[in-house]
Length: 451
Ligand SMILES: Cc1ncc(COP(=O)(O)O)c(C=O)c1O
Image (cartoon, rainbow, N blue to C red; front, side, top):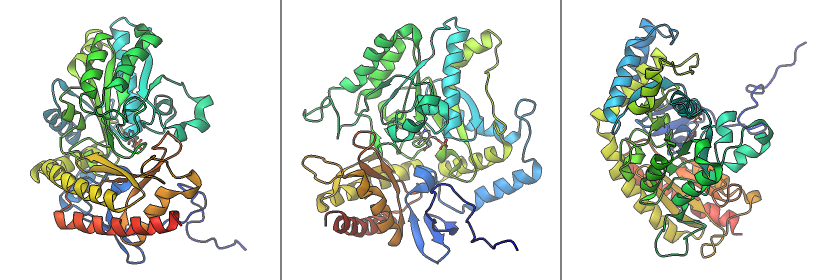
């Protein structure tokens, strides 16, 4: 007789051994577990996905309506109404000449395609030697093998290095742990100038693109680049004919208190990719937005962009994105993200004063993070076996708060942080509730780790 297996025993991902709590329902900023436990969703799914909150009826209706009309068409033969409308709407929100939009299914697809487009842009202009993509250590651009090669998250790269093309990297831009000026009174932007040095080392004739997150998310825990950083980057990219790609998979569409995080620096990248917030978790969706000048050489040589995936320009995902963006605009959630983000960061700063293990708090808008340390003065991180970020996450979860843990914030491998990225609909009293739970969870983590 066939043995009866335990429910879920066939699942090996994400954790090989761990059984995860089952979420049966979600509404607004809250998740509900099967055992009735209510959680504030400050993890936003996987870091900042849940932009407009859960269970928004307008979005559910829009998806159902589109599913009844047409759920799928092959992107290279037909176009759908929601895809057209979404691309046009996105183009009204982007700065400068960033007006050419492509719809994809996720962040990794978007960064991979941004890099492909940069390469094809150079090819169509007669620069076939340009192919290298410079990125930053401790930046993350996706789990696919291409993105692993131009990503800088050591812990997510090492096991796969023999299989990837290893592109050049420059140091991260992090004031708290800056290798150039953390002890100086002011940032001197050496980290940004390393881009020019690296382009020279690699040979400008070989460098196609530079990719960076304006606010580093999963790999460092909401670390914004210093003031002036992207202005320097923009200048360098212009001098050496290098395509500047802003990876806003996590920060895009309002989360940082600006429609796009790069707006905080007042510069326009050549290609911008965004994903999580555009559909708020209601459907797999990402957008790639290119400057008109990037597309013109392809048009001139009548060359199609050699790209595309089965679900590119998908009507159902587009309908979800359209409804989410309309909701975001109608309710002015970008302003709310700014106001509530400032309030949250002020609260986190108080927690840093109160708790020995909170070394740093940072972020922009509602893309915030905290870094845990063993000793504040020296910034000594916890050893990996202490599992500090995970301990905090479990303590928070048991008290009704979901946060997003990460490791590698100190040097790429060691160091613990957590992202705190609640939906952009969060209200002041809910931020208070979040901070109250986090306070208790930090106290419990301290007791466990500093025993
Ligand atoms: C900045 C950044 N780029 C790319 C990705 C990859 O996106 P996806 O997981 O949708 O492939 C992520 C995912 O967390 C991200 O945060």
